[in-house]
Image (cartoon, rainbow, N blue to C red; front, side, top):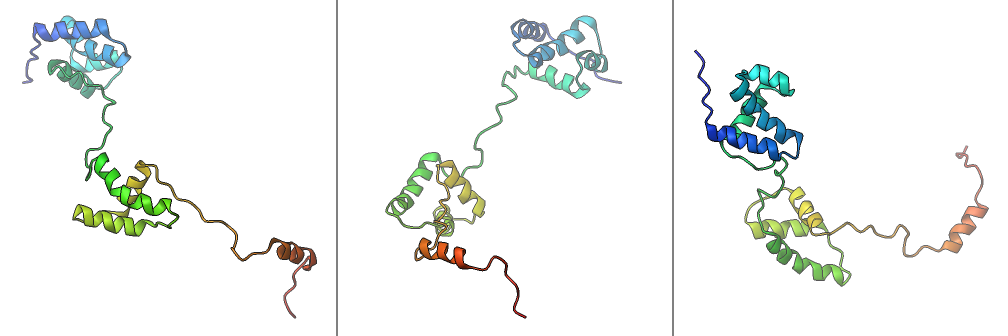
Length: 169
């Protein structure tokens, strides 16, 4: 035999208040998931069909109203597994910043090795790349011409070279 649903008058009042103050369809549906069951004696399947949601969503919405869960669903972002705070990351990168500003060439492997040493445990290389990207560091491509190249000689070669190359016979 199934459990009987126990809905308190506080839950109904909270749902009615949520219904009256709803700014989104999701909030309105959440309120109706409890109100329809309490006032019209509908079961979960009928309520889900009426609201256009799944049966599990009806139970989840009722539970969130009962537990006074007012946190928005889109608040899941953020750094949960960080090894260093943003300030500690800035301090770590400050040592490398002076090398980059005087014209030194920086590569990621030495920065990664220093990060691993600072943290005290091994981390993936992608962690270092994300750290650099988070603080606005970017890859700078070198020039695409050789330092000893002569544009005059190159244009002369283009003018005097044969139009079609044939392999030696």
